[in-house]
Image (cartoon, rainbow, N blue to C red; front, side, top):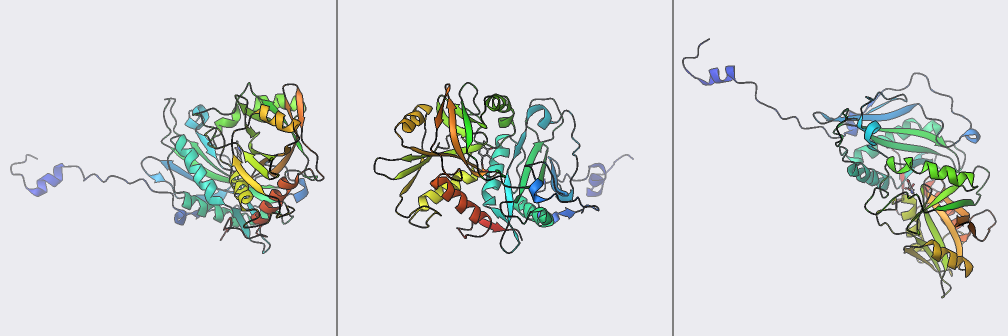
Length: 399
Ligand SMILES: *Cc1c(COP(=O)(O)O)cnc(C)c1O
């Protein structure tokens, strides 16, 4: 049709429909779709649980693409993911995760321990990998919903819980070395028993200096999968030599114990105890347990008395660098009272000896493995987690 006169009608007939710029959707828990498994698995007896082996019936999952944003989240039967072999997560390790637990309270209701801290850390970890951001409040709502659905998996036996593994992976399928503009966010759950099934045992650490877990300006301060891959070989060497975990060093400075933060209890000249851990200089993972223990140390005895610790014992929290030379010297002077490792999985694990340069630094032995400070911390933190002791809203109910 030849256009002889231009009117607004003719303009409309020749122009494409007005462009609507799609706004990528935010992660939105109110859009949750639930597809329950038609057949539920048998829950193994609490006494047979080994960490991370058994997964529950369901998982939460949501996908991000740059046009649509976050898909409606789904809780659906646990199962395999389908990822392109060229995916960013497989080729370039764009994976971050969290480790948290749901505990049953005295009322039989599930609770989380300081979950906002895990959400914040996951946001930071994903950001470090340039993965698409998500609303962490919405993720927490989805986690609570998943825990309520999987509640029958939390063993009612004390010391047991449901380990939660929120994970984000980059799913851009291209070999181009670039940020992943696509992602999959999911949460899986695994029932778990106490770290030490037969009661706490002191662990042996092997101080490793020639291989490092993290370095200044690196990614050790983020919970990224890539931080763990290179630790397995040194861990195998340590195990062969009869040690349980590596004590990671950086230029002779103490960093972490395996995948746990490390604490040292030191007797000061004035008789007070210093409870020290390396500072968060970017090479140390900012553990939720680490932060909680520093706060509890500071609260004793002015705000609370820690179980088994006399109020007359003065504790000073300290974030400071410590070298193996310091540790050796303090041990020789008899001032090194306790070393313990902390994290969500074990809460507190006593260290019995540290292998360094062909010798062992041996820590004083205690009945029940944990020294008084480690014991006080373990008892108090687990009581807060289980909802037996109220402390500063650290325990959050799933509802
Ligand atoms: C997860 C983790 C910890 C412990 O963190 P929590 O939040 O206390 O569980 C410590 N170090 C490393 C390397 C970790 O990955």
